Image (cartoon, rainbow, N blue to C red; front, side, top):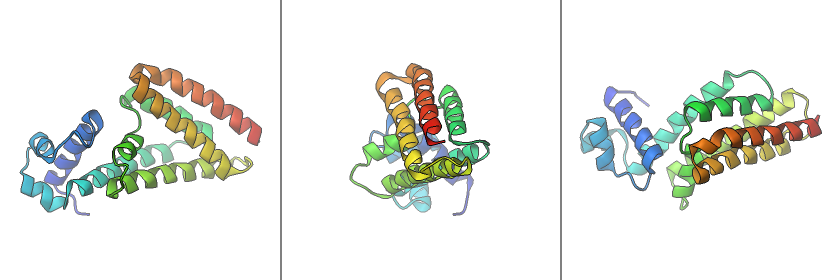
Length: 181
């Protein structure tokens, strides 16, 4: 996909608006106004709002995956990264969980969210396997549930609950990893 300044502005604006206000509550008029481009420019880069949503999520995934892949260690290192993420960025929980909830009827955005969650489980399984832990896929699934539970706690109780939720999830993850050793 070619990158242009207008495309980047659209992705930046849409990412912020979708995360802060929700996908369904944000119209394309809001996105183009925030990006400072025209509606035809949006449609020239993305054929529909659904394609824009998917592109935003794919870009967010690439960023998060790059950050996480740079972190050395086993599955518990993911929880250390998660604590840092919520301390600096996760005011409304997980953008992928939020998108999947809003896009319950499918489409390219929901598919992008599902791919990200599958990638995260595979990354957790890879890390568990590298540490010699038993049943890496099963462990990764359970650890993924803990990560998504943190996101849900933040959505329900607000960002101030993030640190406590991550600490509780990390403790549970440690117990699961020790049992799999």
